[in-house]
Image (cartoon, rainbow, N blue to C red; front, side, top):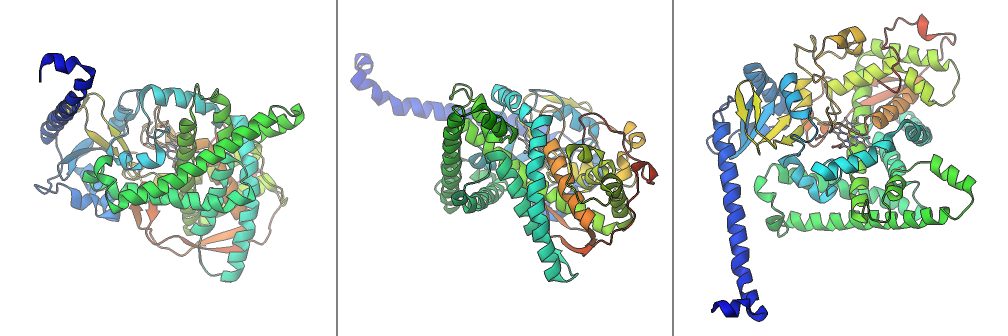
Length: 534
Ligand code: HEM
């Protein structure tokens, strides 16, 4: 073909396949070059021996035993060590100092790494998965959603849904006649109601059933995501779409996206109508803050946030908030059931706040639940709902005189980190006093990170703690909780799952003293720090 012919617009298209091929070839070569650099540099790092082909895949796939292996690796290598899944190198950082180096800076290492890749179809580029400027601007925009005043309005939702939950629980407890029940379906429904209502508002009756379908679709997408995480060759969308699971993923994604888009459209219309009605009603509307409305209001008709942005953030909020809070409630109840003395102290604190009144909690009451707050904290230490945090290094990082290369995937394991005897002298013991000021004073700031730490910490942590205190205090005021299970076996997924569920019995309480004050109690508590629920 002559040069002149190529310049002819009718001939230029013939160059396209060749140009495409060059781009693919170039990016493949770049990919191989980067992988090779990471692979060769990681080879020099300390770490446990692995199979020549499978690497440490056996340990990663051993589910509940994985943490045991990781604990042994920490004993052997302390700060960090390499591992691999087939030929994919993964570094695990184990000491609080090393964790701080990875989590503490704003843009450095803010990329989330391979384990989130499988969740991309579910979350798109919401806060959890986005990076750089997009993450920064959205985080700034969304942070006020968790402001104190808005949390107060969320508390109304928590209280009224907990009221329904207690009726539900009472029926189940009566039916069990003092026996044990699996608490998970009850707390799942409850936290689902918390999240759907605070994210999207009270559903119209037609949408009520739909919300359960949406959460089922989210769980399916999460399951598919996990399936892909341990099969790195399925992480390419290009190949995955042709598989059976790829087609399922597309189906659930559609269900989820169509639903959220429709709710956004409806809320937009409601908001614009409300703009026209009397200011009193608008005030009332504002008081019942809904996450989606706050995003729509900040969107400036798509200039700041598009419909896709809003959908991704709402889906992220639902994904990040529901399972995590539910599990935290379950684990805390399990531990309280196993430790009657600690449960009794928590109950006495509640008696000192509420006396024999059956009134529902205010934000002031929630703040006063300091011992219960410490129970929740230690439960999150032993059973962090998010057991694995992943990052991909965006620059080389020096630790202990070794270079961790740019591009390598790094894992942080709160479940293992929180059981470090150097930081928690009796690490396996449930002990809310671990969070007394004198104990916290000498602890490394990155030794306890159930909500992660640094700029990409959990934006919903206060939401979660207020929700947990609302539910657990309601249960303890009415019941003594007993636990059936012995030591729990837990499996790391995207969240920490108890292998055989959690069975509890709820024994109605007989009312006792009504004149207790907090100062009468034999409880050492953390002093109230303004704007802190811990
Ligand atoms: C006990 C409950 C919860 C726990 C243990 C928890 C834990 C975490 C952790 C460990 C991270 C960091 C993940 C990472 O960097 O890879 C995170 C991030 C996040 N969480 Fe939570 N979370 C909880 C509840 C919630 C709730 C209720 C919401 C929303 C209502 C929420 C929203 C988020 C969001 C949006 C992020 C991403 C923040 C960012 O990257 O800027 N979480 N959470």
